[in-house]
Length: 351
Picture 1 (cartoon, rainbow, N blue to C red):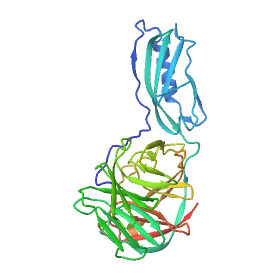
Picture 2 (picture 1 turned 180 degrees about the vertical axis):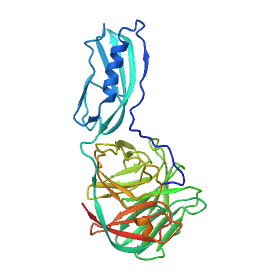
Picture 3 (picture 1 turned 60 degrees about the vertical axis):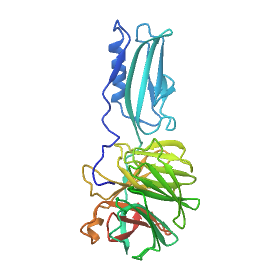
Picture 4 (picture 1 turned 135 degrees about the vertical axis):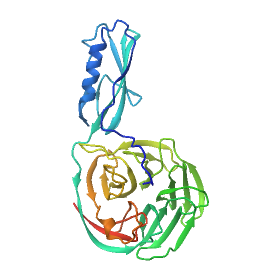
């Protein structure tokens, strides 16, 4: 995504145990610690139950359980909606009658049912791409590419050009000193994220800027944005995808996980045929990777992944940076490019 790394917001390692005990006698401390430790160490999937037993706790008559600050039953089910895939925080309060005698805070992780499949691809065409474009947002419509670029000092732009052309038909240079990110279209307007500047720009289709939104508080940084029906889905560089209505009112969040791991550094995203496709900015310390993951937009389950790491070597600009940019043509083929690349590749997906 950027010119340096940020700290990922997800972690596979379960959190350390934190607790504050009000049970001065300490009679229940060991039993509670053992219960919490057992929950933390298990690998959960949607449909599993988590039971908080109190029968072996001296004098405890009730336990109040909150998951992600929402109260649930003491024997709660991971339903995939209230509690979905990913990392979750839990607070337990133990009561003797009306008196709270003990509490614990910990985390657990929910994984998808299946590992991500590996999908293959075939390059079926190439088109020119301006190597001056630091690609951050990218989509296709009616034979045209719409592209949002990043970097400061006047290099954040909104651009439209015919697929196959080397010069733009429309170009708007952002007057503010911001770092542009993902773009999308909804109801005849184009929306462009900024990275750390915490603004979202709205344009009409003639590239007239008509509104500037404040970035919603849930978003750490603006990375990618796509339209799914009448909602926006936004990535922030973590494994999380946040959903908003057309006025950027928060709706919900999903987390990208398969049965083995989270997929963080979600970057530029596209929606096609009921699925989200997202560039991964970094994997295992490699910034210059070519990975795309395919995500269920309802649950966050990562169902497939591509390794397109060889494409960067097939374009000709030695200054080219990260793989970034996904769009889909009417025939279902995928268009991909990268920051400062001199080519767009047309890809036929092989599942």
